[in-house]
Image 1 (spheres, rainbow, N blue to C red):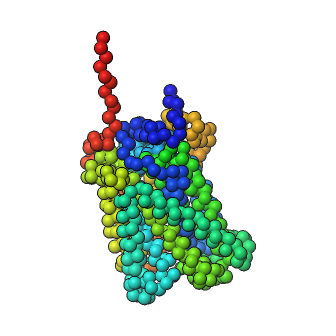
Image 2: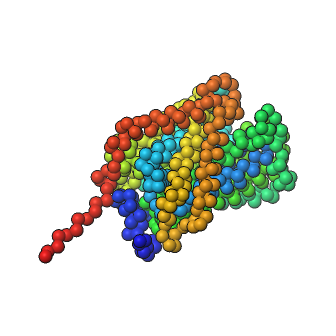
Image 3: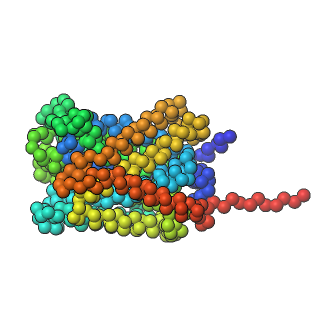
Length: 516
């Protein structure tokens, strides 16, 4: 029988969602509806992703690469709908890990959590490197290493700038979720306003019609499948952007009324990102002075903004992009901390008791914030003299996120087919009779895009010399090592220790003895 829901917004009802997992409430509930929405949209980050990867999409598929944006949205929206239904039922920290564990089994849950955790740490480093794409274009003073013409000037300077950002996100997250939420909310507000302003300014300067998205620039030449091959490569630029909406649910233990707010935040975040990001990309293609030359496929949207808006307004917009990159890195770091905390609380990571410790002062897991920051900094070192290897590592991170999402949508589909899926109670988000169709789309999409992401193409994994087989096959090899090696460690070592740590376990009160 389904329990009647207490009045919305009460902490008692919020915390009751943890009982099914055997957890006692420890994190401080301070986040409102906009805070959770901001967390989801800042992880996706319209201005970060589009500005960081436009050059790749355009260079690989020409203006017609724009169609990958709605294509990716349709597939990821199906995933988001499944996640929204899960968020209404289980709004807990480490969403992907706990959802997979709950609807699948503990082994699948650990693998999904492990893949998501490693991918999140890599993503922090990858997002932080986006500073290099923007700051030196604002002022050459930000090129601290050389003048940018040396062989390793750009790559090394990118590491210097990224290090500053990661140190910032580590400190903010260590000081508690309230500070993080304030900075994130302010940053997201600026990003949303800047996106709208950019759309309007680009629209004022359009020089060609929307039919520009039908031009391929001859990019299909050399591909066995013609333009389809080029388009599949270019689609990675959109696939690399539209994920991370589950962050709104991962903050469920720190949110007010999460079973209602988290599903809304997930869907609003991906819809807003699709609309605003799609318009930015379309109007950029319609307003740039020329589609010829190599600037679009090297400097990307940064070049378009400076070209269309001029140096003053253009650089002002690039400062807004910088803010977007900052809050994006902050959101990715925040989500990774909650995931590490959730896995450690189940004694599913080395030194779990330390990683799961909640600071009595800040009411947040401080140790995971520091450890994840240090690991992200360590990954940056790879970029100094081997930027191609970092491209491989970054791509692997995205692949692992898609695999982690499959670790949720696939067992959810199995549960539906077996009649074991029970949606949240009345009044909360549910897909109803559309659940099976949406779930099938989510699984097929996730499997197809994962295959597209991992395919060993030289154009993606070893585009410039020197050419090495291990770079081209890097994604396949590293995903196999990370997934296989990680799961082997879990199976032979960690699974024998799994169980909610005593200090985090919900103690069931012993009923008082009754007298005859």
